[in-house]
Image (cartoon, rainbow, N blue to C red; front, side, top):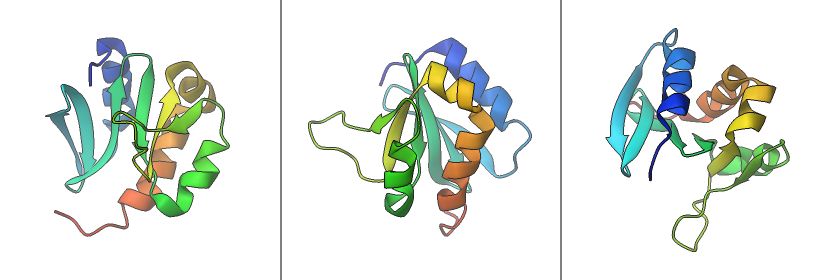
Length: 108
């Protein structure tokens, strides 16, 4: 997954005040973990958020959101959000939404 260095820096800044966060190289790009569980990532022009299956339908109603599909089969509970739409809505709001699911998972 190629990444956008500018979006990666925006994500780092948004996450710097949060606890339990670790950055990891994954899929050829960068992902961030919350207590060892994947929370979010960046690609060229978009962010990735792990929202969980129960929140997926709600997430997909938000501007710029789309199912994550890199293999021809959508990855349930993980979504793409267009970078401009995510920034317009507030990156912290998207992170809070994803952390609601990921924060409830057992730490790894």
